[in-house]
Image (cartoon, rainbow, N blue to C red):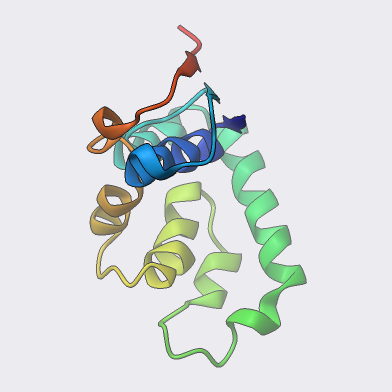
Length: 130
């Protein structure tokens, strides 16, 4: 059984679509899945308290693990990430480069489960807020 919330729900659903019949999981629960990360990161700014809370958590994790990202030739922009005021800005500085994408839009398209969800072959309970 797999359970994912928020971005984790997107990652779980994307994995299930990629693994299709080969997943060892028998069922999953997806809670608050954004499905389309481009849309989610654009609209998250309308929920400024949540956006700030998420980006501050991401920056805290980066600060504690900064040595992993420094000196890498992947194109991480540590200073830009640490000064980010939104999840989208952080994603542009770190996640985009980590996934080898040239733009944030390419990263979001590559990482979203929206285009692969039809390949999920196990039962999934999707719980979304209205």
